[in-house]
Amino acid sequence: MSGDAQHTYWSDPGAMRPRLAELPSDVRALPDALENFVIHHAIARAMGFGVPVEAEPDRDLRTAARLLDVLVRRDGRHLSEHRALPNYIYGTCHDFALLAMSVLREAGTPARLRVGAASYFKRDQWEDHWICEYRRGGEWAALDAQLGPRARAGFRIGFDVADVPGNGWRSAPAIWRDICSGALDERRCGLSIAGIVGRWFVASAVMRDAAALAGIETLPWDYWGPGREFRETRQVSPDWARQIDALAAALDPAPADRESAEALLDRFPWARPTSTVWSLPEGRPTEDVAIRP
Image 1 (cartoon, helix red, strand yellow):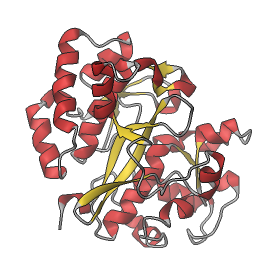
Image 2 (image 1 turned 45 degrees about the horizontal axis):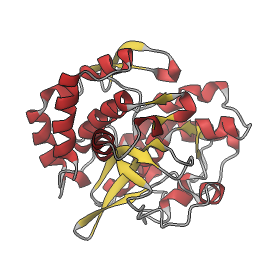
Image 3 (image 1 turned 180 degrees about the vertical axis):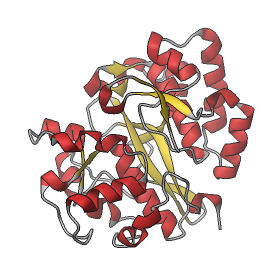
């Protein structure tokens, strides 16, 4: 079995495997199914629903097993059934992608988490966005598992969400290279809803993409190694820019499989996540957060 079809610590459903099996393994059905019980916390706020106090930690759960455990504790019905909003998981694009990846890997389909940016959420902006890539024939295709029917209608999505086009979503390494070549303004790249834009953020996203490709699936607000410096100074020094250039070039186009991506981290050891990271759970900077037990 391909390494990308095998679970990582983060995608393994563990004791929640029987519940994961309630979700469809068809890639085009997954976004519709996930929209029955997962909502992006920022979307919930923007729509005026808000986030229940007990759901604020949802976006820091890290693993598919923990996401599913919290979900069924709130509402134990079959996962094909639509939940009331208070019983939803209030996550991020990371969580949609992680759950989709878990379902696909469980079905034996090679799948991987990708870090990049999408152009279809806000006009003239490339917004930080995580998706799930899966093997279709001999190629990798991009699945945006966050784009269920209500999201597709709200954002006026006209493309196949199981085959997101390159002008809709691009990897962080590709975005970095376009910024460096002058093809893309760094002020158009980042997380504009939080006032976070610029090449420093994209440089950190390149590191997160390298880790995810190698099967180390962090959270969007985890920082380690030089990423901590980028976050603290909001800058990328010339020396580090050259290092990120080399890493981005090695990742764009992406390695063919997890094993190749793991070998890349051996070439760029500073990009490998440390056992504990500087993170922002619920938006609060926290030192020494373990990314796994």
